[in-house]
Amino acid sequence: MEEPKKITTQEKALQINLSKSIYGSFAEIGAGQEVAANFFKVGGASGTIAKTISAYDMKFSDAIYGQGERYVCEDRLIKMLEKEYSLLLERLPHRAEQVKFFAFSDTIEVLNYERTNQGHGWIGLRFQTHSKGEYNDCVVHVKMHDNDPLQQQFAIGIVGVNLLFGCMFLSEPEDIMMSLLDGLTIRRMEVDMFRMSGPDFKHVDNRLMALKLVKNGLTKAAMFGPDGTVMQPSEALYKKNVLVLRGRFRPVTHVNVDMLLTSRRHFKAEPDVDRSKIVMLTELTLTDLGADGKIDEKDFLYRADIICSLGQTVLVSNYFEYYRLVDYLSKTTKGNKIGIIMGIFALQKVFEEKTYANLRGGLLESFASLFGTNVKLYIYPAWKKNSHELFTLKDFEEQLPANTKNLFRYLMDNNKLEDIKDANVSNLHIISDNVLAMIRKGEIGWEKFVPHKVETAIKEHGLFDYPYKIDRQEVPSDVAN
Image 1 (tube, rainbow, N blue to C red):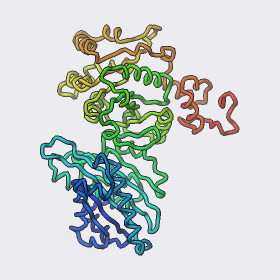
Image 2 (image 1 turned 90 degrees about the horizontal axis):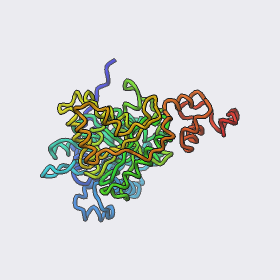
Image 3 (image 1 turned 180 degrees about the horizontal axis):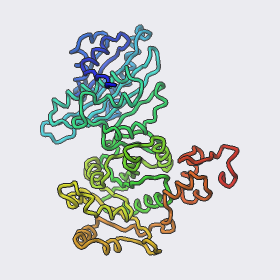
Image 4 (image 1 turned 180 degrees about the vertical axis):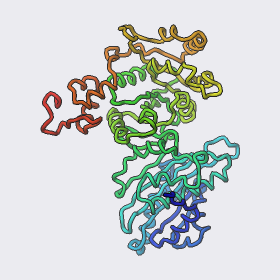
């Protein structure tokens, strides 16, 4: 069966204009004025547009939407949506029974004349799915990669039409999300935050939408906080000191928690770290979320629930190699200190030259990013195989091939690697895969390997195929306790 032909931006705008049930306003700040223009150009705009406004001057913008420290930010976008939507209800009550109202807003920064900034913007829609209904919100953040400000403006115009069309004619949130880049490519535009909320989208878990942004290639990284609220990475990490632990977390064990706590103590002690600006991230990569490109979304949400219950912020990324992750974080934090928490066996893969076979500069090129001026690795120990002796950086150096030993010594001498010497070695025998197997089989005793909050979450919600729930009568007393 042939795939249905995708309609063009102009066809989408015309279809909206010809629909007598869609009516609303456009408010655009900065370089986003191409969105409303698309509806005027195709004709029939009087049937759709109640008002367009472009508060380009900051004083005019403040007078309309209130003062703010920044203009291209989510807070400004929400104020625009609230103001414009309320005006529709206030001034057009006579149309409320015949139409679905919408308020479209964007606040955009394109490339400056010197090409020294990153083009980006916030785009939002407040809309009804039926007349006289409660409103819903769809909020998006985009990063623009065209090297010409005019092309960036055109691209924003396309995304804006796609957003309005998707929310009005598509029912599934993922379909709306995937339609945003119709007529564009990821090389031109990146969507790194997507959120839907409102009475018609109560079923939407925006953490899952964050995963799908990465999974479907709309961005390389997405974030959500401990409360499950999706976050825009550049805004959340701007000028922050970031400490990251990568893992599968199936489930979170005492070892994972100790890695975070001990590394944080080391990180806080660094002279170039501002303790008030530390952000801790637990990172899940696509490769750790599934095999052969298949991701179990239910399993992902299990892990998200557990990590969030411990108060952690989650980064979902498609940066399999550590150096790519660090390069991304360095640009996002604007050069502030970055700490990477890593088990010593993971460090072995970092030093294997075959890992970088497809990289022109090989190991040296990767290390330029991984061990940049603002980066430090905190190495968690392990037991030596078939031994009760700790495997630390000293032992690691002894096992390195001769051609990389001097490189390792350089990194040590320049404080780029540090042993976590205060690790709780009594927990080093805990293996996540073994704990997971015990949970699924309903075996007794797995509880002692995980934090109490993790145990509670697993039992209350039946996570990881746990065979009992603590509110069921059939739960054995030794399991329930």
